[in-house]
Amino acid sequence: MVRLIKRLGILTAGGDTPALNATILGAVRAASEAKVEVVGLLNGFASFFQDNAPHVILNPLFQEIPQLDATRGGTILGSSRTYVNDGDPAFLASIERRINRLKLDGLVCIGGDGTLNGLQPICKMVPTVLAPKTIDNDLGLNYAGEADQWVKLDVNGVDTYRKEPHPTGLDADFCIDRMINYATPGYATAVYEAAEGVRRVRTTAESHHRIAIIEVMGRHSGYIAIGASYGQPDMILIPEYQFDLESVAERVRTIYEHQQHVVIVCGEGIIGNDGREYGASSGSTDPSGNMVLSGAAASLADALLEIIGETFFTRNGNFSTGKAAFFTRKVGHTQRGGRPLRFDRFYASQLGGNATQMLLDGENNSVSTLQWDESSGFKVSKHDSSIFRDKYGEIHARTVHPSFYNQKNFLLSEEGKQYLHPIFAEAIGAEDTEFIRQSLFDFGNLYHGYKSVNVDIAKLTRYLSE
Ligand code: F6P
Image 1 (tube, rainbow, N blue to C red):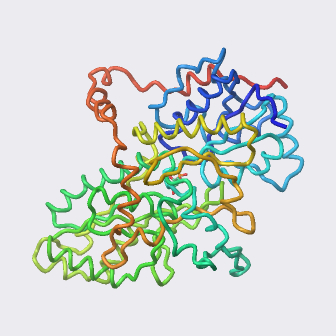
Image 2 (cartoon, helix red, strand yellow; image 1 turned 135 degrees about the horizontal axis):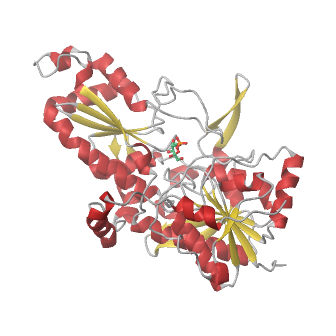
C-alpha cells in the first residue's frame, strides 16, 4: 500500500557540490505541487544525531523560502560526512524516534556513494531515496552487473576489494548509451574549473619553459581528470590506469624537446604500476572512511625529476636546478564551490523533483538517476539501490571505463570524447557568462562584505522540543 505523504525530510550529505541547492529546489517544488511540506535537516545525517534535530521548513504554505536559489553554490542546509552506524541498536532507535517526532513520511538524501551506503539503516525506518550529487562523477555503473565483479580479499587482516573481469564478458560489450547514471550534478562545474585551470597554467608554463603538473580531485576516479581534456593538457594520468613511470618520463622528454614545456593533469589518486600511491602521502581517512589524498602532483614532479635528471633542464642555462623546471598546482576546492553551470542546475533540479515523485509513488531505497542515449538525450529515471551493491552489500565508486583512456599517449580516447560531448556541448549557458560579467567587478562588492546564508538559516531553524 502506498503511504500517504504529508511531510518529507531532505538532507545533503558528504562533500558539497555546486548544484545541491538546485536539487533541493527541484525536490521542494515537486513537493509543493503535491501539497507536501518539506523539512530540511541541517548538516546531513548529523541533524538526526541530536535530540532536538535542527531543521528548517523549506516551503511554508507550499511556497519555497527565498534562500533556496538554484544558482547558489554549496548547500543552504549544510553538510557533513557523518553517517549512521548500522551496528548500534540503541543509536538507531534514537534516530527512529527523532524521525517519528519530526513526522516524516519520506526522506530525500542528496549525496554520493558514501551517502547511499549510509542511508541503508534509515530505509527501514522511513521510505528513503537518494538524489545523486558528486563532483567525482563516481556514483553509477558503466553497465548493469558491474557491481558483481568486486571480490573481497583479506590483505594482512584488512578487507580489500578488487574488481575482476566480468565472467560473461559484459565489460567487453560496454556502450555509453547503457551507462547507469551517466553523469552526476556537480561534475560539469568541477570540470569547468579544472579545464579553465589547465588553460591558465598553460601560458605561464609555455613562457617559462616549465613542466606544470595540475592535480584535480576525484579520489580514485579519473572523471574530472579526463574532463580536464577540454583545457588541452599534453598528458593526463588517471587513477584507473597504473602507469609505468619510465614511459611517462619518456613521453615528457619527447614533448618537452618539441615545445619546451609540458602540461600534465593528474588525478589525486594516481598509482604507479609498482603499486606506489602518489597521492596517499597523509595515510589518514575522513569520517566516512575515505582515504584523504594529497600531494600527488608534488610526488609525481619529484619522481619525474629523478628519472629525467637535472642536466636535462640545466644544460641550456634556463634553470639553475632541475626542481625549478617543475611547478605543481592543485585546483582544490574551487572545483567544489561556487555557482553551478547550467547543465548542473538543470539536471540537478530534475533529479530532485524526480526523487520527490519517487517517494510519492511509494519507492524506498532507490536512486533518482540520469540516463543518456543517442536518440533521446538526457532523461531522469530510477534504479533500485541494490543494482549498485556488490555481493557483500558494499557500494564502490564508479571508475573511468578503460575505453575512455588512451594508454599510449596518456590522453583521452575517441570513446572518451564521445562520452564527454553530450555533457559539455551546452553545459555553459549565456546566463553563466553574463553572470561573471555583471557580478565580479561590481563596484558594490568593494563596499559590502559577503552575507552568509547561514545567518538567515540560523534564524529560520527550528528544534524538536525536549
Ligand atoms: O568527494 C568529493 C571530494 O571533493 C574528492 O574529490 C576529494 O578527494 C575530497 O572530496 C576532498 O574532501 P575534503 O573537502 O573533506 O578535503
